[in-house]
Amino acid sequence: MIRLDHITKTFPDAVRPAVDQVSFHVNKGNICILVGPSGCGKTTILRMINRLEEPDGGDVLVDGRNVREMDPSALRRTIGYVIQQIGLLPHRTIEQNVALVPELLKWPRGKIRERTMDLLAMVGLEPGEVGHKYPHQLSGGQMQRVGVARALAADPPIMLMDEPFGAVDPIVRVRLQDEFLRLQQTVKKTICFVTHDINEAIKMGDFLVILKQGRLVQTGSPLEILTRPADDFVLSLLGDDRGVKILDLTRSESLMTPTDTLPEGLCGNGCRVQTVQPVKIALEMMMKNNADQIGVWRGDEIVGRLSWNDIKTHVNRVSG
Amino acid sequence: MNFPGFILDNTALVFEYTINHISLVVTVLLFSLALWITAGLLVSCYDRLSGAVIGLGSIVFCIPSISLFGFFMTVPGLGLGRRTAVLVLVIYAMMPLVRSVVMGIRSVDKAVVDAGRGMGMKPLQILFKIQVPMAWPAVFAGIRVTVVLITGIATMATFIGERNLGRLIHQGITRGDADMIIAGAVVVSLIALLLDYIMGRIEKKITSPGLRFQSGGGAGG
Image (cartoon, rainbow over all chains, first blue to last red):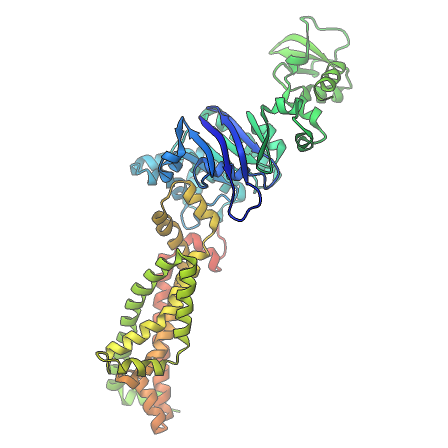
């Protein structure tokens, strides 16, 4: 869907390139996260996809077409764009803000209105209540939702998001992340997402691109990167709780020992996890119930057991 | 002090001067707005050019008005009268107007412009749908300063043959008639206040309620 081929960009007066020979591709319907410390070139890469910046070398292909050959404005109207500062137009109402791209595309009025109302509801806002308000009358979290709704307005297949949840407090951020992941289940956009927060990257991403000083360091799924970090830089980026993070991404069924009978010594009915729940939850249950092992269930049926030792061995093996 | 008495004794004259004064100011305002707001928009896209134009405006602004009136009067084809008066006052209006447009456009939040570009707006759409509407409060501040300024300087045009309220002040000075001077000054001030008030109403109509919080309207809702 999006393919970057050896793109390079040096800003005027800069000593080293902001982006240096970076190549990766994003599959359709995936969330690709560009992550790295500030100044690693992640925002610049994002902005080269919709031609807000032009690369000095290399190509960007969207849907097989080189963006260089497309009209920048027309290209951008087919790509949703969300930024940390949100950038809502302060002189327009929320409704008018969301309607911006459909207006540029000259949709009929009735259709624009209908779409705007649907979108506000979709991002969890009350269309009748906030539609006629102005941006300064909204809270940070509400504005960020409007930003997402605006980017989705013309139903673009691709979304570019630059630290979209960076400006809100941690509690609202978690809620926005969860809601966005749920939304993505239905809209299935191809998303490029920039963040400096590795936890956000692991939580949101199907695919991670780790960058350092304009160079690509490692790519892979969150679990691949957690279990096989390429170098010390990635290791330090992941933090000291890499093992716990791995357990958060590992399903209980993948570590359990299969069984169809309830073994002895298992605690009562409260002490069970479902096969698809992360091992972290199983661990939490064990600690709460002071148990050494736990039953793994698929619906109402027991399918296996998971012990403290299984988990310890696993963490030791993958992150040791 | 009996300036109301002076006005009542000379109603026809004061009325004539007042009408002349207002018509001169309004004419100047129409020309200035059309000319300098367009110019401001054109140069605002170019940082260096806008700096140069504002610099030029500031220099012109520093020339004493009486000498500027006098100088243009001597230019062939201009001479005494309305044409010269309008020309000089339009030149004076350049600095506050061009400056307020350029500053207004420049003060627009970069993130908003960036979001506009990112959504596929073309440069002209960004100018007229984002930058101009957002610059209105600053532009109107400039327009209101200009109105008051022009109304005041217009009194000087009496020296090149304008029959306006400046004449009351000028003749009051030569005759040592305080009432006459005050009568002229008070009416000029009232005109300035009135025009400023009208501009304020228009500003309220044109500026989006979404921008009002910036000029101290308080965040509602």
